[in-house]
Image (cartoon, rainbow, N blue to C red; front, side, top):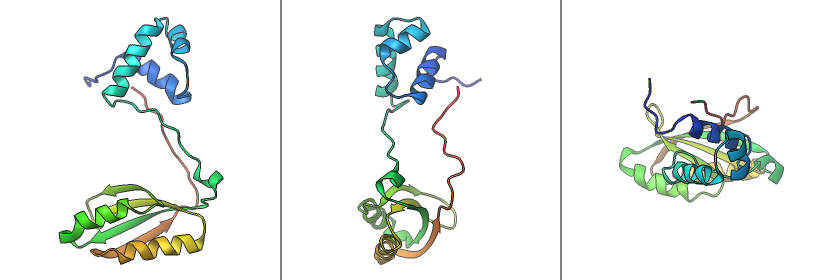
Length: 150
């Protein structure tokens, strides 16, 4: 069995916050039959130890960013650091992972239009050290999980 840094009460707090990250500590305390102070301390520890984070997730489509996709990038190994820094500076890029395999980076993006997408692809390809890009457009989001089970 795994020796996780959380117990069953922490797991229940996490499960409640998964459903609604704005659930008041008093409500969590009532459901779990604990004091609000105990819940507040546990939640502070979960946040301080970076076991969880509570964030707002933006619905990009509602803001007009209809095109979502992925770019796999192959780089000159000597310029990987430079490529990473320049990718971080691109506004429409919201996810960057350095990976192994046939590509060096996996990047996810949102764009408002085909013109915005073309501009983004051109900007990525202009980065000194980018050797090859492979762009995919997301046709349908089939599964998107933020849940977790202990």
